[in-house]
Image 1: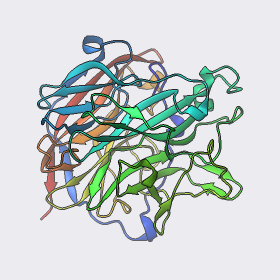
Image 2 (image 1 turned 120 degrees about the vertical axis):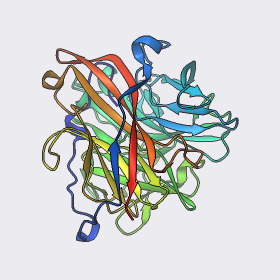
Image 3 (image 1 turned 30 degrees about the vertical axis):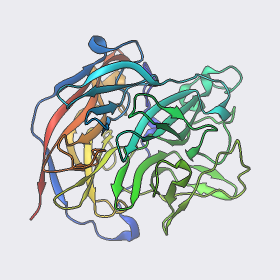
Length: 394
């Protein structure tokens, strides 16, 4: 996430390389994704917001509720939904479904919370993953620095709705789905923890998501930075999520404020991702997984923009290919303005699943555009969409 006036950039761009697991040769693309249409406006912060908290600040997440209507999230930490009978009719609902407490005790996990993934089987009971930021620089005595990125302690927690997404409540006590095995530290000096989960996708009896970590190096626990894969057979029970270790889905991340962690589990990063995965979906014709994400120019990425990659098993991914070129939130706003793009997601309005985790041969690429003034990323943001075609190889 980014704050309204400050981007996350440097520490999110963690290079994981392009070598697939096990050193196997990279397979040809399983499909081809091509942007075919112009930008169409879905939501404008300056035109449609209920208050100053309504800005696109996360990838779009959608589900069909029990009545057949669509609820879509992807705004700021005062969580509201866009709702409507279809994607052409989505309008913001000014009811706050989950607010952020701004509390100064990191053990409460109630400082700044974004709904960043949802899953529902029936459209009424909805499990959610929360991107939680403890912004220690905003709380007196919690961080020696006043620099946002040097004080940021990040955790993925859980919330649930029993009314089709009209309201959400975080679990009590909070359940840590993914977090560092140590407490927030006054002198931490850099971004710590797990953050920016992808959407949740279904794979047989399993539900999975991808999440980023900046890693850590502690006695008995050396966690590499990168993107980790999590799996559960029941998202409604957030204690059941486990991460891939390289040999199985066995890594758990207990709450360090409620349990002393002596020998912490770690996860093995997957994929060629330089930062968080915007979205992952399954292509119905091939069964291939398609992930979209943003990257800044450098290293393996010849241009800044949105990239996509495919996989057969969510573990081994092929070489990323450019979908949309443009300066992103990871680029220097002083040089990249006056407009940035961020938070890509991929949604098929004709998805067969209630959670829009599958796509056919057409879909929508949704993302945010952010206006820059000088070196400042402003709250003047739009949520837009573009049509894409997905070619299935014979």
